[in-house]
Image 1 (tube, rainbow, N blue to C red):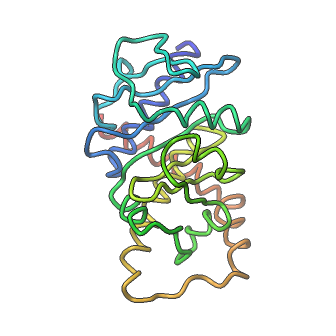
Image 2 (cartoon, one colour):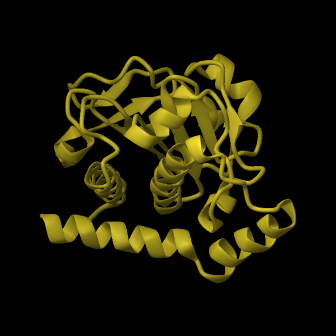
Image 3 (cartoon, rainbow, N blue to C red):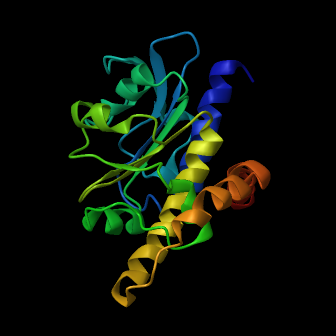
Length: 223
């Protein structure tokens, strides 16, 4: 498998994994990867659900949004992808979905509350954007890895497709917990616990990498 096919295959796995996790039941949502050494990205076509994506549904587009490979439609809302890649040299993959629980949280127009140990991934690492254009996302994303778009959905980014995807499903799970707990007024984790727990689950336990392995196994088992 050449480098281009490898990148496209990783996008297919990520899309299908997100679909299996319930993040893409309808049309919409996009997963992209930076093409090393080029102002271009691979990204999924718009006219398929994430669960349906195959390698034939992955397009190459430049940073101006022109399709370089493929003859399919790209979402009109992809401008933030090249915008983020231009602004963040550390980002090599971007995931955006309208998962039901991430979207439910976005409907509250507030950040995720830290109500479980895995929610500590998002402690001081999430921002709210006014809308889904890079003109809005650019000024607020900073060094954050998660963007909540009020009344829309969410974006996660990562150094690898595995981290971006695993972070996304973790956000979906934590959003579900947060929204379900909201009527109860459940407290958030104490501030003094959060950095320690974040280091424990990410650096020491490698939770995102382990979750990416799990997501790949699920896709393989479903094929």
